[in-house]
Image (cartoon, rainbow, N blue to C red):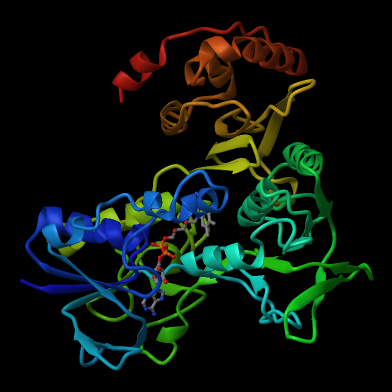
Length: 448
Ligand SMILES: Cc1cc2nc3c(=O)[nH]c(=O)nc-3n(C[C@H](O)[C@H](O)[C@H](O)COP(=O)(O)OP(=O)(O)OC[C@H]3O[C@@H](n4cnc5c(N)ncnc54)[C@H](O)[C@@H]3O)c2cc1C
């Protein structure tokens, strides 16, 4: 029986532990510093917004861990000695391991802005950040304005959280249009409009210059590179995340931006592995980045590594890219690859449809010569992940996707009229005469 020690009780570490327990009798210890028990990081915003209590973000009852013989240690790992196979915790205690898995996630980026460590300046990542926001921005009387720096998915979540308490928000975004490094221009423009309609003061093409302190050392204002000074009571730093690996700098584990791993999730040191946000693939898998800071890939890495550690070696193989998020109340899903104008592949062409009045649109990417379907972005329309995944695997072309779009629709009756518009536009743009067909999504998927 081996002792497998996991640093980090996020989705990747906990998935790994659960699966090792299903597959073996190995001794399992999870060491983590943030909270006693695993919680869903993606649900943090709903706690602040009053939709749920923090306890409700914990998917397992507290007895689950003992019952499954998963030993939980609350502590911060300061040092890893891979020669002695031992860890030193901040409280001075030592923990020995046979196999070590680093699953320490990410931390919010700070780019050396003057004032970035003042009171009232915070990220939105951890339970501690949630508590800090509750303190820094309890209500609109105590927090007259918040400034958020960095226009990605976490930034817009933070804006939504603060607006739910009617706190005025200024959102500083470096790009000329929201998230336009990822979203095609039409979608990015729609989200700009949507943010502003939600009374968020979106300032595009604007960088934070400095955070100014009051006499008690608390943030009281920011200045921007446009020469503006904005008074505020809280500053949210949401300009992306980086792997949380500073504690490994003196170890002999190879590091890049994250912990370097191969497809087996092995590091350069025998018996040491890394998974989740902190793992960096030597070579990116397909169009994915070498570091993937998303929930489901952490889960997949945990599942794959559990098999490897239990004697059934398995590569990490994430399949076709997908992701989902929310931009305030607009649901967004992406399946396959749809690149922004800035990152567009030279073979990639887009078909874009936007509803005349509502904030609903889709963009389909396809190969301009072969017309191979490459990916789809949906805003405000829910489409079935499994269907697009299958079409990507089967290398369907754009006409096929258009013809059977109804089968991909999650709620066909409700959205029927959108499809007609989409296909009408497609036919007129490309001189086609496609009429919608239906096989039935269950029938399509049965054949997988
Ligand atoms: C607000 C927010 C919303 C998000 N929403 C989405 C979403 O909608 N969809 C999506 O796909 N992804 C989302 N993400 C990203 C997703 O949550 C992460 O990809 C995922 O949580 C990473 O899991 P992980 O197991 O790698 O690490 P983490 O969840 O970061 O867990 C790592 C744990 O290790 C601990 N730790 C770190 N260093 C040490 C150490 N030296 N000693 C002991 N413990 C240590 C940390 O404190 C932490 O608790 C969101 C992230 C945030 C912050």
